[in-house]
Each structure stands twice: as C-alpha cells, then as structure tokens.
Image 1 (tube, rainbow, N blue to C red):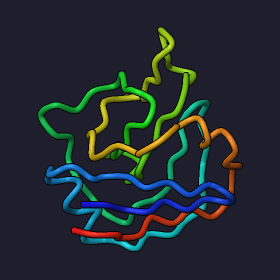
Image 2: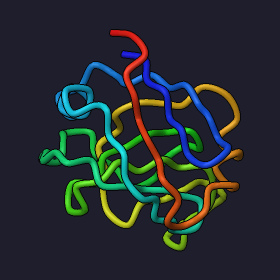
Image 3: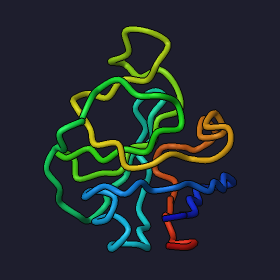
Image 4: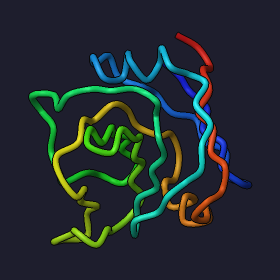
Length: 124
C-alpha cells in the first residue's frame, strides 16, 4: 500500500505494511492534520483506534512509520528522541510498526511544529 506524505516543502513516498493497524490507517486515508514534534519524531492524529500489536516496540529505525496507540497518532521517526538511549529513535512507549518512508528520512527535520501534514493513497 503506497502513500504520499506532504508536510510543508517535504514530499515523501512511503509503503504501509500488511498489518491490522496499517489496514486501519489505509482505510482512513486521506488524513490531514497538524504536526507535533518530539525530537527526531513527527506525529499527528490519525482518527483511528488500534491496540498494541504483538511486535510493538519502543526502539525504531529512522524512516519507520508507526502508530502510537495511546495518542491515536501516526508517528514518523527520523532521528534521536528524548527517550533515545543510543543513536536510534525511541518512542515513549511501544508502538506498532506500520510502514516505512522511501528516501532520506532526515528531510523531516525541516517540518515545523504545527505545520499541516497530509497522508494520501497512491496505490493499493
């Protein structure tokens, strides 16, 4: 499931994986909201509810797209967060891995708090 993520001047393609949570996000698209930032993570309300999946975890790779259950939000990681214990991004609590962006995730550094972000369907 291919998606397009637009935020300010940033445009990224991404793939959503075949997981129960990713399916819920796909069904809710398009999503448009304001961005929040937490170190090397941007996140935004998704408008869906999901429970933690069996493989939910805190430590992530730059470029991972996750779903934060408690915040009902999509989170995209691109660098260290305040919870990081190494150079890798770390979520505040276990999150569901739902996809991965294509290209260089560091471009998300240019996305400002409060900017509009949209996630749109590209192809199934």
